[in-house]
Length: 181
Ligand SMILES: Nc1ncnc2c1ncn2[C@@H]1O[C@H](COP(=O)(O)OP(=O)(O)O)[C@@H](O)[C@H]1O
Ligand SMILES: O=C(O)[C@H](O)[C@@H](O)[C@H](O)[C@H](O)COP(=O)(O)O
Image (cartoon, rainbow, N blue to C red; front, side, top):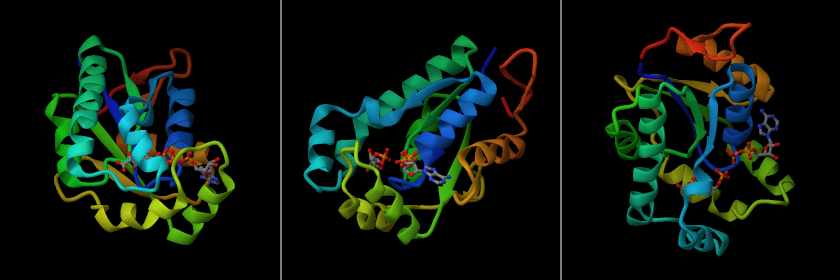
């Protein structure tokens, strides 16, 4: 059985981790955090306020594609928070063969900067937000997913994402049923 996978995407601070966590809470899906798959060199670079390059992101994206494909093949539904800012990055994530539904959380730059400034326990400086927005490519026709304005609570956004995905949860069995897989 191929299990569906959700990638919650968007610029730093848009709420990916919070919404992915809420989706996992509702569905029981395996929760992933792409930041934890970055090599230390990438974390070090971002911590120093230097944007990552495509080359920096290459092996990291391959690792995330593997995480998604392994879950899909093992029949384990998953949800992972991953910036996935460019179309070609999302192509790498899809290349592993996992059926992926993308949830793009969009919000005004000032709103996100405010949230990032209030966050004290994170390596990502707010100064990198402009570079994140400058390379961001929205989902294009043919890409399976949805854009959501990231202004509701994470729980409401999670429910909206699940409604849009066609993935449902069985209240008695907290796992995805149905969906595009
Ligand atoms: N929908 C939301 N409404 C209000 N605050 C939020 C929302 N989503 C996230 N936050 C807060 O904004 C900050 C960034 O959220 P986070 O989930 O870490 O984003 P990301 O994973 O995209 O960097 C956190 O302090 C979080 O508590
Ligand atoms: O591709 C990138 O430039 C990074 O993955 C970046 O987009 C990511 O957002 C950071 O790792 C910060 O982590 P948060 O997204 O959790 O703020």
